[in-house]
Length: 532
Ligand code: ATP
Ligand code: ZN
Ligand code: MG
Image 1 (cartoon, helix red, strand yellow):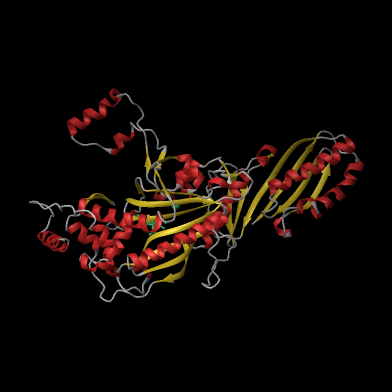
Image 2: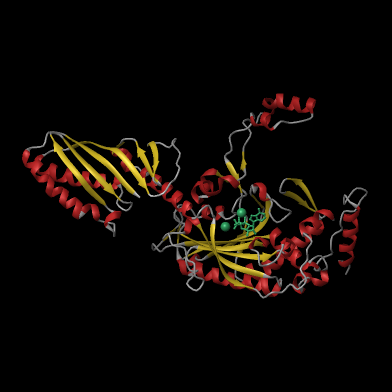
């Protein structure tokens, strides 16, 4: 990225000829020294390529990289001039204007023309030139310029990833375990036998039998993984103010998958009279009519489930006594608009998750991740006896250097990033094909991704990191059923022990439920195995 612009400095009085003679020296100092400070490579710093002093204006053409940006360079030029002209000639600086500002990018990117400061965008030979409107000293002091650069850099990074959300490298996998793969889709079976009923797209009611299985699995996970590592339960809200999502980055990154919530415009019931009357008479409600009675959305529904954790520690100063902090939350659902990807209980709009979160110094955060990783492996391998694999995934926003780690041997997992756990879903097809595997959970360490925007500080100035891990209950159960089937004799011993710990709930069997004859028969088969 190259930035160019013309800096116009208006002085309080015309320059005497001695001052004009001083200019080359001042520019030399700026170019050789002051404008290069803070950048390792010359092309990342700033250079004055042309200058001209005339009466009471000084004009400089400046070209910069991204370390000493045009705005910063302009302010540095001003400082130096103000000092030398002020001391020697009693000349002040009246006005600073940056004109013909261009941001030249080596890639093709698109950016909203509605953004303030953007005048135009042209594209030629794979390059993009963004022209900005004239900027004044106040604009240069605001971080807007910096944020625009960040936006452009993020767009460029995303481009380099070619639309892929993440980069995937296998870390470890289990032995081949399944000899006779089950080809039936457990999602379909669950619906057919009536253990789940679809309320709306991607949203289900789980009847007591399925709830019983989900609870057994969750309890097993808590007992085997979460509690032995000393995590303590908290209850997080499930509807977050928009500001929280601005800070976590979710609104910028995944706004297309977020479900939003609105409050009514009024608490006065009489103001809804028209709408209520219409419902009485028409026995229907049009979302467009309802919208007129609602405020614009001010909340978004639980997306990553760990957002409230970072929010809680916002602006706090923590000392060693309470670090590391290890919590988990399982108090409610997460919501995601998954559009066309919705399937059964494995990809839903409303799902349930045990979210494990922690905060500490980098070495603490890494150590906790490592312990969790060990327990997760034990859980997948020895407790649930799954066919699993784990992979290091680098989401595009963590990719810093432009070079993605390709070699498994050279993978350093002690940097911010994510480990995904995946299970083979035999009903989808052969294990050799990646699309037949499902992400069931993950562990991330975030570095300062959240402690920075939420300004979570250590009293001695040490760096603080966070980590989180999501155990999506539906996905784990689905994976288990896909690999082990519905015959309890094939279920892993420990899981069965938890299932049997309390009486198995009754299934709903009635005149019209489950809907089909086949469903009823299948249900009877499943139930007969559950008779202990
Ligand atoms: P995928 O790539 O499969 O969409 P993801 O990367 O979006 O998964 P995360 O954002 O890492 O998933 O969420 C953490 C965990 O939450 C997942 O590992 C999974 O167990 C669960 N999860 C995420 N999205 C859904 C969903 N739509 N339905 C059910 N569980 C989900
Ligand atoms: Zn999280
Ligand atoms: Mg997803």
